[in-house]
Image: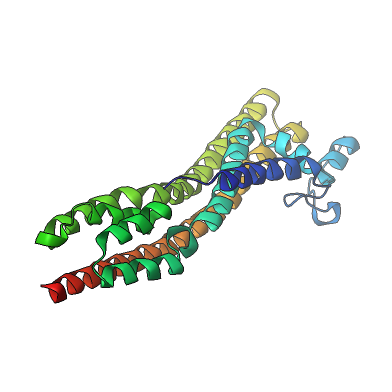
Length: 268
């Protein structure tokens, strides 16, 4: 199935929009904490500035992005890909992309009359997945000596090829949903390793360094889940929608060839 130029432009625009939103969002992001909600408990606090930094939650989204460390860059790429795929699938995975009721009616009328040439002409003039599949079957139809088996095989072959491409873009959502939490977990491990290295090098006398590393670990975990959960939800959403569409396509194609077979039998 060829992708319309408008659809590709919308997809690219959506990807650019989410990147722009990342830069433009104000302070107090999802991960930011209000200072009044943070309780720092310690027996002796010698450095009041360290406590103030630890309790401050006034961070912008960009600050949180940088605090998340290296793992935020692949997570950003996955978030843009996931957002773009969701928009793209909302545009492309719908009945109107695969068939047109008016074209199906014209095909049905031509096949009910046994006019194979007219049906082929309708398919040529209206390129869409259903007409491509029907056209493949009609190429192996000989009205003078009709044999349904070659047409049926051609329809099955064309359906496998024509309907495989849209599902690839749905599967990409599954990849995003699976990889995002894994990348986030890898960032968590990296942040915890840094935290333990800080303890080994400086002990517990520098809570700010320890807090920064733990913050990196928690930010990447949360970011991976925030990207992965919607991606998996929409993967199953579009998968179910596409299953209904393909089932309907099978019914449409079957009805059309039944009309042709009935017309040819009447002529005999």
